[in-house]
Length: 220
Image (cartoon, rainbow, N blue to C red; front, top):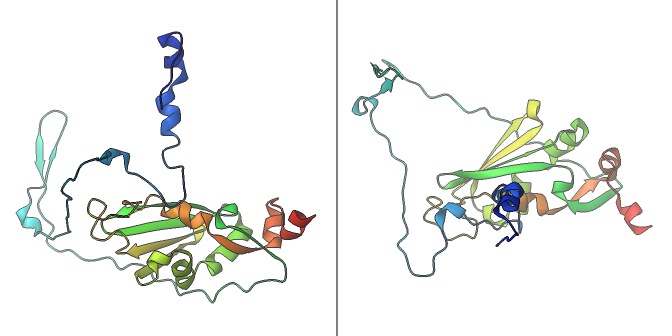
């Protein structure tokens, strides 16, 4: 995109870079190009990487203060692994008599990204009425249905009741990492918007509560 004006001052005031940057994550749901990677027109080698573990004694832990002093940090004498919380799968949300097929994003927000070869996605709502439905609707099986690529993956599900959010880790969706897979969304940034674009059956009473037209109102 190119912008022109009669003077440099007009372009400076327009702040086109900031305006375009604000659109960085918008576009076709499920499609995202990592702008930091750059476009390529010739064959280039791909970089593959994998996580590894080193003993803490092999690393020189130190803190450098602003006055130049160095504080060395000795490895702890004992370490432990904190267990992840486990949330039982909800029974599923029964469909009421009146529902409307709309994108999930009509009632929920989402954000996603990459964690090595895994993609994580969080879905939340600010409306407590929608939350009661959302947490029961978004089961692990439902996520596999809404995101076909995750059908055969190990999916980890967590709930954050205080945030009214459900969080999923899609293990292996990105292969071994964002730099080595050939997906159109290499780093999983568009998984959230893809999920929000999926058509689902939403109870009409929730749509009425947040002032969204229901199926009956669409047909009138």
